[in-house]
Length: 473
Image (cartoon, rainbow, N blue to C red; front, side):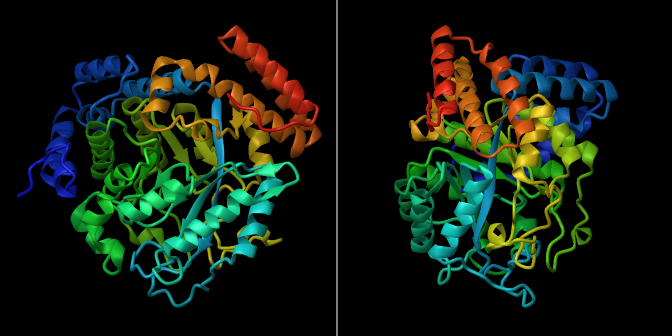
């Protein structure tokens, strides 16, 4: 029997089944101990995170007053570290060819009804121009796992193509990559290609459930998949993004597993995940979410988001267009720091005049355009940020975390957010959005702590107004 060891590089030791069951039993036993909950919340108020044991115990508590305090602390921590900035991105699906047998994904190799499609480099160029014309600066690259159709050479060529395209004032400045687990050698290739974050969802950390959900294909190897972040870190990629697909397995098990994984990366490599994603299972081509009996209701989902924010205060948290406008609004307040906008989850979807989802990986709940999402966020008091500066300035991994922990991020991320929002307002926004956006920029400019940084930001904003682009701290 495997023994828990957070610094081991063996999946069944750093994600240990028996240890997770112990944590779940402990949390269940102490869920009504309100004095303990207050102590955990008090620790959280130090802005230094919680252990996965403390976080699960807090999540288990059903007391209404404690739950309200969880939401309030999630909001407080988010505002302390991230202010009102929300990073914007879009997924770009390159290919839905896949050899895996994942039972929750319509790309699975046994699906004979979904049309298969793979973008050529020219088609990628047209997709990127369409994304640039919306105002996007940051993409998350997606592709099914297929050694013949989607080899690493195709992914690398696609990244090169994306970075090369400059259309009007548009440019994709950061390409994050969400592709199948691979080798140290291929992670080095991705690093050399200039990717931002390497993202890989675990789907579920329960080994038995994982193997049942992935009956065939390379992804069926639980250990190889779970140890992928270790190989990426060993290859020099220090910005990695974790996530599970809530609804596949009992959410409590996966909540602990995900935080245990974050703890393992922090303990072993000195830096935890750059981002954590929180998708819930959605309908798709031949996938019915009702066939999975672990669905997470909205009220529990919100608590998951808030407790994650308290437990990993330095980690970016991502929510996609899988979720509704209402859920996204509520979760932005208590922990989410990155959202997608105007997303198409089908291959070639951005160049289609009408939304066709015949090659989509999942149904989109929030179907608004990027411009509509930006306008909505400004109305809510947020600064939509298209910033990619830290990645391009080499502030990744522990260097980024240091800036966050010391508070210096306020003199870097806030100015960069304001300048990239100004670019969007000048190039892509309606007159009404432009006016509202300028008002929030003026308000937030005055709140930049460092006087010299504030003055330089003001100068750059004037230069952007005059037609220049791409300033950054």
